[in-house]
Amino acid sequence: AQSVTQLDSHVSVSEGTPVLLRCNYSSSYSPSLFWYVQHPNKGLQLLLKYTSAATLVKGINGFEAEFKKSETSFHLTKPSAHMSDAAEYFCVVSLDSNYQLIWGAGTKLIIKP
Amino acid sequence: DTEVTQTPKHLVMGMTNKKSLKCEQHMGHRAMYWYKQKAKKPPELMFVYSYEKLSINESVPSRFSPECPNSSLLNLHLHALQPEDSALYLCASSHPTRYEQYFGPGTRLTVT
Image 1 (cartoon, chains in turn green, purple):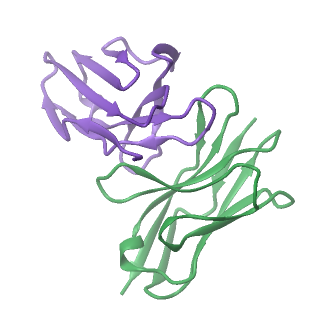
Image 2: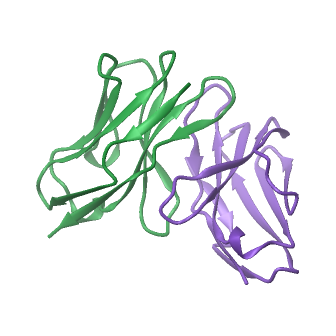
């Protein structure tokens, strides 16, 4: 069965320092993986996606993620945090055949000035 | 254009009211979704329409009634809701052969 674990419920970093949001997945086959971001009182925006092409995926706003099959991880990184990055981030795995997504519990990213 | 629009942005309704939420996309997507999201939680899937036919109904109470009039529109009809139904309701759409979903801004529903 597919599952997603986001290892941190909250991550706090200072503006200008690197961001690391951790995600591990469990899947019986090669999954499609996504990161979504949700700013307060807003909808969900697709940050990036992995669909079995390059293992290092670049997304919007300077974010990237690396798919590591041996570690079953898909961690999200950004070299330098900006105040506007403060939001909730969700790691998501797709179920191949029936339109359903498996969501992680979310990580709240806090940016300190 | 990767935009999904939803109306209204906010809705307050009493437990005896009937109201509808509306969603529209013009990306040529043939799958459309309704989700419910409570505070500090990931979204929960309610319904999926594929090629305008109801594909998935996640055991949602009958006081929620979805409708897909055409490939671009999705409605959610609400009747006799309970206070615990207060939440952010999100619409999403996806291409038939890709898995990523594109979300609208949501409707913040409050049931009094």
